[in-house]
Length: 560
Picture 1 (cartoon, rainbow, N blue to C red):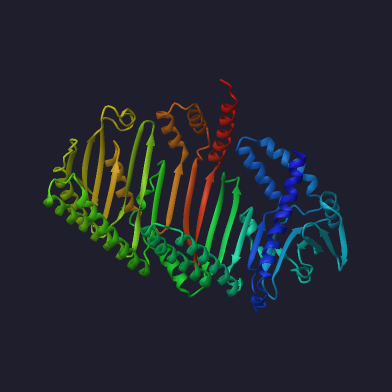
Picture 2 (picture 1 turned 180 degrees about the horizontal axis):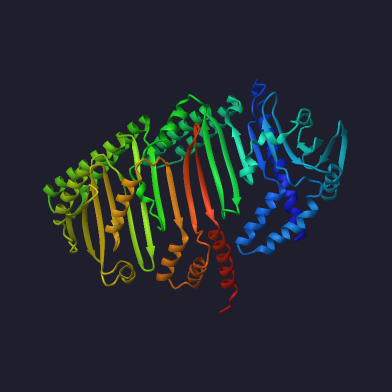
């Protein structure tokens, strides 16, 4: 363990130095791209929370995962390697391009002599090169300098000539929220360098497309990939900041990763982001409390994407019509003509939906032991047209050679302006597992409103669909671009009810004894001139991961 902690400490320091060294080496290949802005922000900032905060979170995470002894040993053994450092202050690094490429790492220090002694004990002798700068000769030279309670390190001595008096200010408070964070100030990266990286991406994409033998796939790659590269290029020109951070909150019982992006004021990108985060949702009712999984989304369809998507839909329409001509289940030409008309009508509605410029919808999954209910749906330009096509499709299906006795009831009832149509499909005796979950019949519901379509199945699917419709009406006006919630408790209870695996049963039992914090969540929200996403994992999930590893390890060691 001592060797492990020593290696961990060396790797932590070494990683920071290597990152900034590599960036400096890359930028040195483009010496003409310096930016003449005196007050320019660093191009990249790396933030590390204080040692006290980091070690506290290590202890919390290892305890939750069921291995508190690991956290305790790391804390004890790392003590000797952090002597001389100020454990209450954050650390970090930065990369700038003005007046010249520069990459620097900084650490808070309380006793510089003690730190240099420890470095010499671990990695080699330091050479005094004047003006308070010391040099460490490894595979690459590293220069160190102490100033006002901070150690600055770089692979170029000149980078230490004008270090900030308080580098903590460069972190812009990232260390208060995150254990580790990286922020890129996009416009502080010279335009020539951004263009160089974009060219590399484009060349790699073109090589990939050229190697594709299938003409249809190659055209699809060119279409989609070309749009993506165009977006990347525009993002590089109009973005302001990109931030990625990982944090832990023991008080709230969770760990999380954040990603955020902001645009320059007045740019088209800023307008597009604003339109994305301010769309009003008509389907927030999919976020059903207590569900095993829920999804809700709103997104604009940009004008430039509408035209290209319509072209793709037209190609799909032609393909579908060709397949109908080959379908032997359709008894005659009249049936084929009817099928083509239905496909054409559905494609028309889909095209109208895209042209409306908004995607909005969601899904909900409810799980209980040996019971499943699911509903999905969203905005559609003409729900009543879909209803007519569905009725025509059922009439056509009755002409097929194989009719399994499906019971269809249109307009079984109406709820919240949505017509509910039920489809009951017998489940064969041989499908034992399906019958265990769904019974002897699978109940499916299709809901059609003026501007909505829903699909649901399960023994209680009608009531679940009604709940979603009512919840959407009550929550009208929500603007979250995307929300995904997954609860492991119901998922494991359901899995244990249909699977004899002892590991699954053990994990389900462990989850019952948890703190009710079994969520994995993805959420998004609007921020000034930007959007932020968060992936959040609650502590019962972390505990489950640790327990699963132990149970699987014990199972692997069991010779019987």
